[in-house]
Image (cartoon, rainbow, N blue to C red):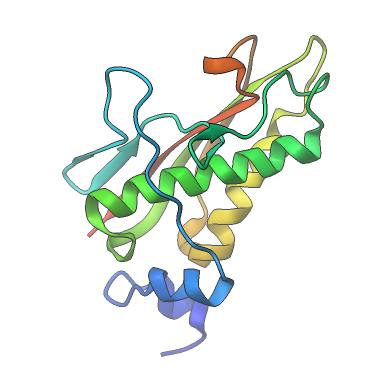
Length: 164
């Protein structure tokens, strides 16, 4: 085997839980659904997560529009929290070590009028996947500005991963 990043991107040799430990990242509890849906669904070799809000300890970490009440930097941290919540849902469904690669990330940013920094905000999620999964964390992505999100959340992230 070569470097750790290459080793980890080999579908037959995944140790993502060990990588989380190396990074000092603990996955949170799965966020309970806020309506009539489940946190994640598997079909074939794909897992789709529901949109994840920046909930921590059962509470929304912040509220408001990015570019007004919420700074870009804070929103990027919130997007990272959303991504951790998505990983928790994936882990609960199939186990984090079953992940082969991150396929797609969709991020929604509650944007103040004129705000155009949605890609920078969603980098908070994308960079987390790179830290954990290396090359297997490289993904397609959409970063969309919206006028409102549930519970006045500043950001919401959904993820699609390939699993073994």
